[in-house]
Amino acid sequence: MIRIIFAVFAAATIVIGCSTNAVTGRSQMKLLPESELQSMAVTEYQSFLSSNKVISSATSKDAEMVNRVGQRITQAVKQYYAQKGLSAELDGYNWEYKLVDSKDVNAWCMPGGKIVVYTGLLPITQNEAALAAVMGHEVSHALFNHGNERMSQGMVQQGLGSALSVALSNKPAATQNLFMTAFGIGSNVLGVLPFSRKHELEADRYGLIWTAMAGYNPQEAINLWKRMEAAGGGQGQPEFLSTHPSEGKRIQELEKHMPEALQYYRPVSK
Image (cartoon, rainbow, N blue to C red):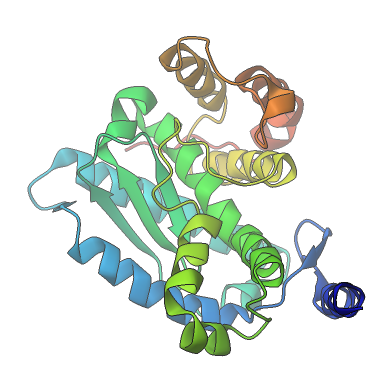
């Protein structure tokens, strides 16, 4: 009986928490207010930066590049949302871009536009256009509330309820761990964050658009994932065993959406 009651409660919670994304048009289960996640992101972002080595853009060309690419990507996002009459969707975003000294091949974006790129990613990106593709991808995860979806699902599964403030009060460590996992912080598997195939491919598609609108050639994303595949030594998990698209599948999808992205491409000099 308890299981039945829990199942009914979970189902009702999912139905109540469903909404439609204004850009993608996809129905999503989002139990957590974006404003609360953005507030939590500010705290967790500062905590992360204070416990890791942040490289200053004043002394590092790589950090300066991350900042430059980040600004171009986010300006493209603002332009796109403005053209669609959706600027209000970006309320609460206070963009920040940091390069962190780490061998991990990763980058991520918290709610509200809190971005980190690890130095271990740069030998694989190799150029600004590829870095733009990565940052555009990570920004898309935040914009489309993918982490909110994953955290909402996790809170229901772990019995934490659907109120973030209550979960933080009752089980702060579990809630914090769920937040870090939901937004891919700490993952180091060649930059592939723990999102579903649907999330990854959605982020890839729009990441190409932001890259192109920022003045970078979106076709460099294909070369990037070929290098990712090579860096993995061709030993990546078979796609059916993973929650992520294989490099080959990802490249196929990138090629599929490339004509759309190229319509937005206007080269901009550095």
